[in-house]
Length: 484
Ligand SMILES: [Zn+2]
Image (tube, rainbow, N blue to C red; front, side):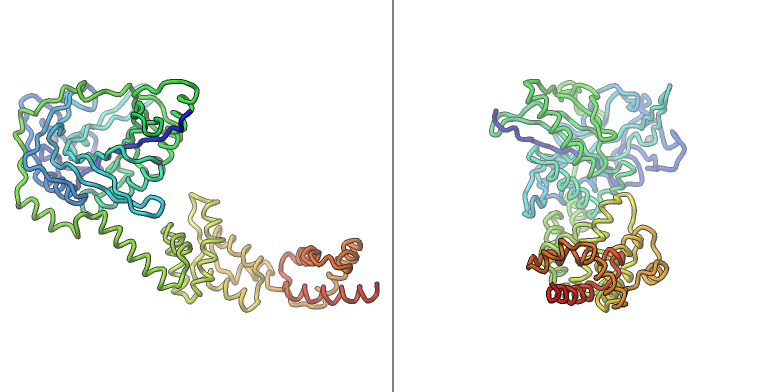
């Protein structure tokens, strides 16, 4: 069987940062009592007429310029008909065949190099109300109904969950940097639908499944990988994929409805609203609000400059610099520890070693160790106050419980053991306990040195100085070989 390759296209609903709704003066609010920020227009009362929010249009123009779209001078609002309890008019006002922006592209890093992905269109529309489902009833709040959105539609050119995640992250960064949206994903300001299909390489596209309303970058990645695996399994068994919409919750996807085609919605131009003009002044003010156009390439250039600066300032290898910049808390801990006087190479090793291990093992917790304590642990190893093994144990305790290195070491009696006599006694005891290994070692099997050093270190829970242990072992072994 030919290998199946995934094709992924993303569509993002992005809430515009306006004070009022798309077609009425009702406020955009999260704290108001349910159904208090409403009026005849957003409730769809007969005879109520929509009036376009100029600021929403200005932000849509800005969104388009930020990703290199062509701004259409006369776009058209259409009605999209369907029934749902959160849509009192029985249709949503959106844009269909004449959107406000078309064309454009988003540049992202895939496997370390820049790739360009086309954007098909950006259109303006209004949000629906919000339904919440309870055991035996559902509640509806129309405060959200009529909130202005842009929908950004990417071409289905992505071929992995990682690339899709990078695309969504970059679009979010661009739209937030441009001031188009506040981008609070918890509040649903930025929600992604992912279309996923599988087909033999080079062949026609397979039936696509739409994953709805994903409001987290990581969930998007997981949901897409899950969907690719699901389709691969069905197709591998000779099954068929139906064009459907699926929801994603708790690490599983579930079917919602069979997916409609555009024709099902009976789009037609909204008779209440004429063509939407975009003027030269709109272009000028949108460009003035942007640091650069297109914004994605500007941000990537900035990243490159920042990377070179970071790498050369600290004299790091490319791999270390990339790993440290990969997680905001790694970079923050590293930079603060270096500012506290740590040597960049040592601190980088600790952050990418012990600190990263602890963070990966405790994904939902924050490491409590202070950058100053990372520096003091490194210097205590250097001057010989503690051994490396003890430093690792202290580091873990500080990550988990906080506090300071000195008191953790003092309270547990973990300072390095300098008692040469005690170490010599332990060395003799270990050799006496392993006569066979001793004989082999004396006969020239030098790799057994490591075995003996480990056994002695265990006697002191890692607190003995490995150099002293080694020197005393060599002394004892030469005595044994003379005696033998
Ligand atoms: Zn209203």
